[in-house]
Amino acid sequence: MHLSRRGLLYGSAGVAAVSLAGCGESEASTQLTGFTGIAMPTTTSNRWVVEGADLEARLQGFGYRTILEYGDDDVEAQIGQIKSMIDGGVEFLIVGAIGNKSLGEILGRAKNQGVTVISYDRLILETPDVDYYASFDNYQVGVLQARHIIQRLGLEENPGPFNIELFSGSLDDNNSQYFFLGGLDTLESYIYEGKVNILSGETEQEPTSTERWDRKIARERMARLLEDHYEEEPLHAVLSPYDGISRGIVEALVDAGYEPGADDFPVVTGQDAEPLSLKHIKEGTGQSETVFKDTRLLAEVAANMVRSIVDGESPEVNDLGSYDNGFKFIPAYLLPPVDVTVENYQEVIVDSGYLTEEEIDGAAPDAD
Ligand code: BGC
Image (cartoon, rainbow, N blue to C red; front, side, top):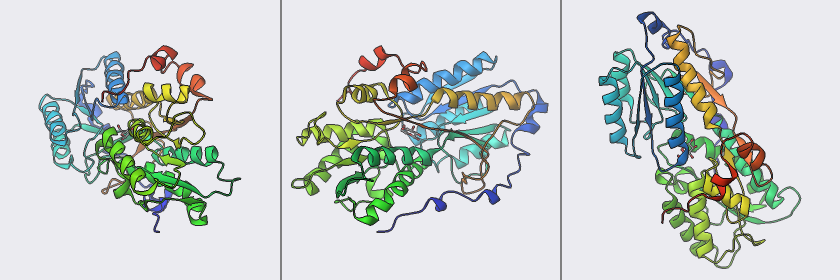
């Protein structure tokens, strides 16, 4: 089995000879007003809804005008929205991309008009016209998910073997490969040792992917895997990259007769600390983990990037050599993700004011 290496994704620190000149600073002399277009990818995942509003509030708090649009997971719709923003005279674009390789042309147009482009959460690829990247340590997200499985199954101390299946996110989202490789690299030694089996044999990113991060697509794939490989064999864990996908996986497990809360219910991971997933974590009725990315901090980082440039300063970055978008290493500010389980959700999620217990308890079920 061939497992890809982290080194394929990450450049060495020595490549970090990125010049920050031309990254928006020169525009400060032309009396920037901070007018910002915010292009978010979707409303199907709660995080983007919260962040769009948060970004607007922060930027407006600085006295800047904003336009906020959601692309509904439709690449062409997002391109149209960005075009209107440019035509409307924005000086900054904060873009949570839908198609990571689809924005080259429209961002070329933005650049011609002197717009500073901040790639938000997801890196935009194959264009020289991205100035900054604000995100999380996406590789670490996968590491945390895999560590949860290792710990819950007791992979260190138990002889096994254990059966695990892998899920990854949308192929056209650059983050997917980072989440997936972080997870796979962390599980790799157990796989080679024979302690962990993946009975489907689906260990590459493509066959494990979930288009548009869609819960129902994940549910269908899980149902197929259970039918094809787990009629006789138990399934012990599922590496899932995102809460919506995790809930689709849990639905398929329940349909196949696994009982949430029972000792043999598979360990399922997740990401984004969505209220409904936290409810399942709290009540023991589904996935047992999520990775929390404090999107309040991400919105703050991106808004502060805009403000620094308006003030004629260089935005703060903490990484110059990890994210190569095919043209250059993009100066980035990366935030740390946090592992959340029933043991620490109160402290990390509730005490920090991200969600209340009532919001978690009252989370609406998925639509269908
Ligand atoms: C984000 C995740 C999110 C996923 C689906 C990814 O790009 O980094 O936080 O779960 O998109 O919306």
